[in-house]
Length: 286
Image 1 (tube, rainbow, N blue to C red):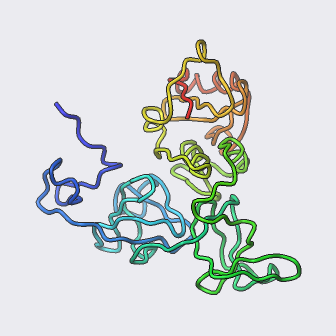
Image 2 (cartoon, rainbow, N blue to C red; image 1 turned 90 degrees about the vertical axis):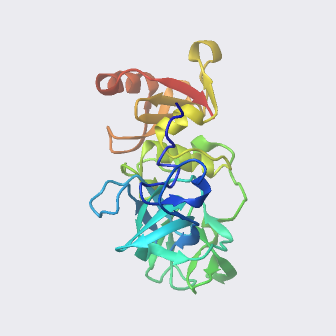
């Protein structure tokens, strides 16, 4: 028997489904998605259209989605980057695709009402947020990127879309040290273990699934430490958890133990986590 499609990655419900799944699932109604993008710094994607529902993942400013339905203040969507499906507050959406030119490359960066760091910032954006730059300005020696809505950001915190400044995901992950742990988090304001892995790889030009079980099944190649050894950038998996190796003896991860992104000796982490979730379930080289 063919296993059911993963509902995290395929938009189907008993009453409605993505028209692209018409040959794979039955639904009374199929719809063609409409393009949309996020217009707030961070928005939660939830498994149910309820404000007190858990956070499955997050979507960042300027990221694009496929929208299947709006109802009762919620939108049923699929994130274009990793295909995650869920519900967002419909007020965070703007219709249409994004013509962003740049990506935020710092863990967090302020958006100012103009090209002057003395102005009170309007808000902050996380790494991987997408913005449209229309020009530049120089104020007291600091270069600013001017955005399409009239606001400004520090130019050095942005990269052109498609440009990669760093090919080492571990060094990207290390930029998030001490960032608070947040279940379902995927931003510089709060992040979980698999979100950290996904973010670090994305900023080095590599795509990754969102959740740790998906990463353990599909990301890179499975390795055997006894046969292949361990090296910087390898991933260590537990049931429901994942972390990077900074070197063969040091783990860098978003830890529910410290409630932050932290580094610790690998063996100490193995011993500590074993009391709760058992031994590592596998190792992979992305």
